[in-house]
Image (cartoon, rainbow, N blue to C red; front, side):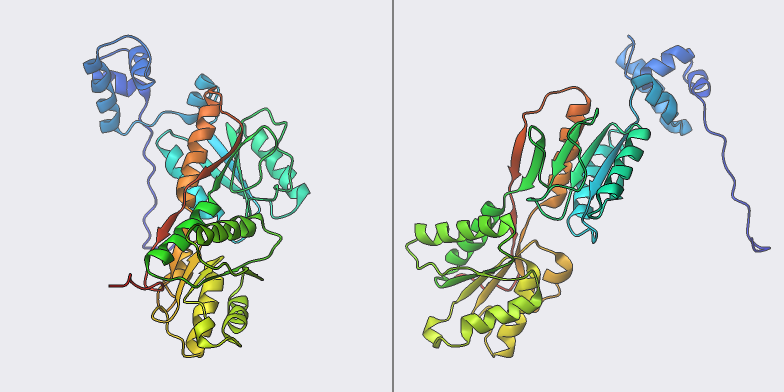
Length: 347
């Protein structure tokens, strides 16, 4: 410690007895008021709570846990190493639980079964009230078995076990938003460039793309599938614009993620093709660090991961409170975030 530094002072916590004395009630009455128990007038209960707030009283978390047989903590397991999907989802979970006095802690299991099991055992040792499992794709299980735990488990943005509750984004609905937006803008030759065929979301989005075009009597081109990368976006532009005459060029490209879309836009610019004047582009994920830095800024489908996390947190709380939940996968809607890459409707 430097000679000029002042020691940190720690105030003695306010006790329940001090709250009771200041409010002019017994300790038992003060405890019941703060725990929402006992019979008393609403005015008395509020006066005691206001006194506790004024004094800065904080209930003893261990005592609360013993009283209610709850730890007021939940675990979040993920193999999303970069946090691209798990961090916004965790923000939603925390938002749902913070007002309930519940804390969330994150454990990254990577793709390691042994590490996953160690984290689960640690969570059980800490007596978490439940676990939310999430990942980096919705068609793969986490590398750990959560099917026979003695606590509730909710799956969000990862494949659930049979008979469990799972929440995912509606990828097909999100693809519809993108293609239908192009149609409202007067675009009619719409191409689709997406990621690897091994991903279920690639096929869900491609099917929705085809369906919207067929419903509107438009020609359907087979989607171009490749990697989740800007390099693939560049390569796809070569395939789409390399040989056909200008009359055969698409006037819009719906991309499977924002990285592909950014590569597409850069490659179009290099060819002297204007975005959005000549070709409109829409991405998927609304990864803001990519979408907002693209030139022009990228219109993209947002999977509402924060909302997904919030719904997962509330669903877990319901299970912890003993309320039954119907098993199965529940799809939550996406939204379209419109920026400058897709142009304006015709006048």
